[in-house]
Image (cartoon, rainbow, N blue to C red; front, top):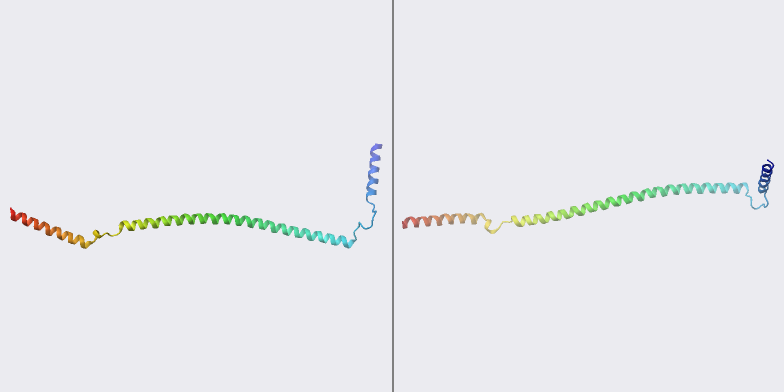
Length: 132
């Protein structure tokens, strides 16, 4: 018990000795303390606003990254659409070449071919009938 009492007394005496002011120039006046407190409040306010701005900018950057990914997906789909449309144009050109009228598809030629066939057939038949 004596030892504990001695320790308590020593700790109180050290605490009292540490609170004594030895130099006058380490203390701040009331006005300086107010100025320091105001500066600290100003710095805390600036820090909190800058933190808010940084958070908003981080969110905005994330949104821009997502927008960039969406734009790249849209560009890829447009490239695919362009390639498919180019293939479609090529198919239409081939179809046009395949269905283009040829010289032998003319109705006039087929008419005269039919008339010629009839005339030739009748001529052959008339000669065959005369011969027999």
